Length: 245
Image: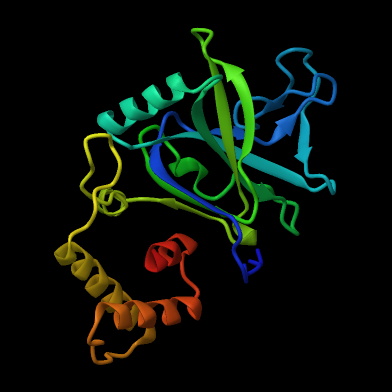
């Protein structure tokens, strides 16, 4: 499937975490009841026994969806801070992050599950980036009656979004350690830490350019050089944000 390049980014959302359950496949629907089911488990509607038909897109193309729930691995301390903040907020609701992957019938009339569906098992580590379209919010009540907000990521890989299954090493590399103040806010970086981060950024940018330029003499010159390369290089928008901070 042809991928359309994103030439500008005015919105980007990135999340890395682990899956709370095996992904659910939906590729069939009941014309009478409107329910959605998987052709792997159902050929007729379990409610009215009618034969199931394809789920179709707005333009009538048969499609399949893989839906999962992702839990960000913040760690117990940050999770508790978030719970406290949400509790103190008037009408605050804890979020549940879900996502959908899509696949469409090909020119030969074959409809397969979305790529990665069979790898999306409970506990798998994944990373999602969506660009230039927002999360879809909706609210629901948990089993204990607590209201929660569902934040749905619709992952359109043919329009520049990405979905990755991460190895343990890749997942660990997504976690950045940094000191915090007693209230949980980021601690100021000392000159030594700032210089180390600048040096690491410079090395990454040199690798992107394929050259080994002499190091600038000052931190300001290093940051100016980094920003110039970032502005002219196609990279992850979050990496760009980190380079300019």
